[in-house]
Length: 99
Image (cartoon, rainbow, N blue to C red; front, side):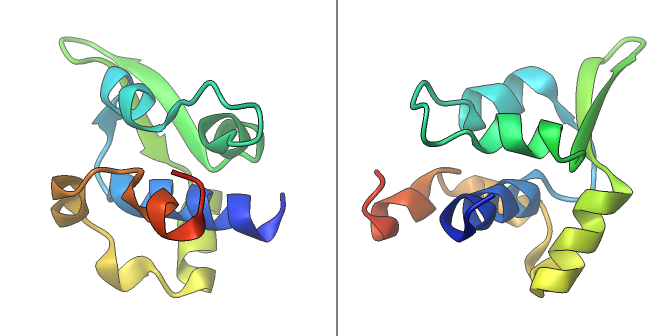
C-alpha cells in the first residue's frame, strides 16, 4: 500500500473509533468508486477491520488488533474516538489534492 493510501486507511481507522460501527455507516462514508482510492477494500484486505452480525444491531465493523497496532505505530491513538465523526470522514482528501 502506498503512503498516500496508507494515510487514508489510517484516517478511516481513526474515524471509526474504538467501538464497532454499523457496516452501512462505514461503507457510506468510506467506499468510493475511484479505482485509485480503495480505502475500505485495502483495510479489509490487510486485515485491519472485521465485520460480524450482532443480533438486534445488524452488521458491525470493528478495528482488528492488527488495525489497532497500526494506529498505535502511527501515533494516532491519542485522537482515537467518536469526536472525529463530527467532520466529514473524507475531509482529509481536500488537502491532498484528492477531493
